[in-house]
Structures are given as C-alpha cells and as structure tokens.
Image 1 (tube, one colour):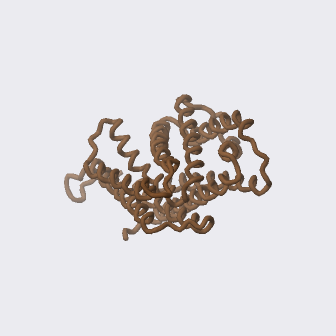
Image 2 (tube, one colour):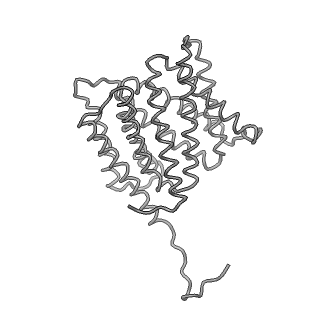
Image 3 (cartoon, rainbow, N blue to C red):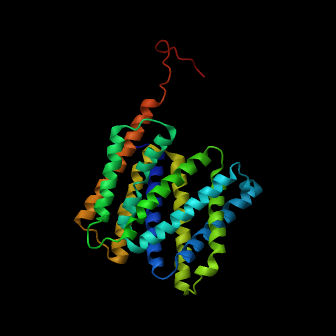
Length: 307
C-alpha cells in the first residue's frame, strides 16, 4: 500500500466521512420517498441548503456572496442539480441504495469522455474499454431481461448523464466564480422553483417526517462541507478512488434499513463498476504526471541558485 503524508491522510479520512454521510442521505431519501412527495422532499432539501449557506457564509461575506460574472451559467447549474435531485428521488424509490450508488459512480468515466470530446482530445482505447466495462457492470446490476426489471430502473443512467453535465458546468464556473457564491446560487435556484411548485405538491406530514427532512438537509450540507475540506488538502487523483467507499456504505445502509442484501450477480456488477472507476482514476493520474512539465535541472551538482 502506498504511504500518504499526514495532510493527505486527513484528506482521505474527510472524503470517506463525506461519502458515508452521502450514503446516509441516499438511504434517508429512500425512506422519505415512501411517505412524502418528491416536491416536498426536494423543496426541504433546497431550503435547508440556502438557509445553511446564508447563516454560515452571508454574515462573513456580506453582499460579495451575491456577485457573479456568469449568472446564466449559475442558473443552468441550479436547474441541472434540481434535475439530479428529482432523478435521484425516483431512482431510489424503485432501486436499492447500493445498486443505485454503484450506477451513479459511472459519472467520473463519462465526464472524462465528455471532456475529451468537447475539447477535441484523443480518447485512449483503454478509456473506451473502461467505459464499456462500466456500462456492462451497470447492465449486470439492472439486468434488463430479468423478471424484476422495470423501465424505471434506467433512471440512474439518465442521472449519470445529467450528473456529468453538472460537473462540467461546475468546472467552468470554478474558473471565475467563488465556490460559496456558486453553492448559494445553486441552492437558491432550486429553492425558488420548488417553492413556486409547492402548492401542487404540499402534504401534511407528521413531525417525525419533518425531522427526517431536516436531517437530510444536515447530512447533505455536512457531506459537501467535508468533501470541500478534503479536496483543499490533497489532489483529486489521490482522493477520487476513495469516493467508491460510498458504494460500500450505501450497500450496508440498504441492508440494515430495508433488508436489501445484494445477490452474487449484483455484487459482480458493483465490482466491475468500481474496478473500472478506480482504474480510470489511476490512468488520469498517470497521464497528468506524464504531461506535467519537469523542473529544470541545475547545470551542475550543488550549483542550483539559492532563493
């Protein structure tokens, strides 16, 4: 096993903690989908995000939090995340949490291919092979020819495509926008739209369900906060393989709360997706290392200029 410096070890622990919270969030969404409408769940999630960002960031940043150079791209990111939230809700309504998470983990592979295609770069044959392997793993999990298959089980694949678009928009905004500003506007777009539609989705919910919705908001915001802290301490190539721990946590959550124990074929599909994803991360790190310019060597031993 490669050794990691202390700062990288902290980052890895933060990322593992973040994906554990995300797995708990997805498990909670599945539980909420049985007692509350999609409109109520998504509305509560966005309102909590805006409230959390406003309370924690707005007092320190003031109106500077609202300044953006690319407002329409901010709106597009908000609309894309709202689509993701709805797709995730309906996907978790019909699928076990572990299988859903495994399919969503195809996103990094698709992002690599989309980014290469949009930039006109050549895609290595191994990357096409990894993408094909990941899709094969997803088909093993979904099993379209089995008696338990329903067309709704294809929703996570639509979520993967939407998620890839969301990540590409995020990368473009990251070049000019403050992360806190982007996070605030994304939540604001979702909160405004879901509030406008609330009269058609409102339900009278018991206090326990409201407590669950509040917990979901806390889990999501805390997970994103830990993830940001992790990526501030180490490179993405170091941390991305540990994102796949979310599949483990999600599978355990589905088994503990819903009795969804994956069978041998499902475990095989999850293993294929995870292997392709981790190998894709390693390939990205290797390509980045090769492309990075090497530092200039001093003309002779001991002759390097001193600062």
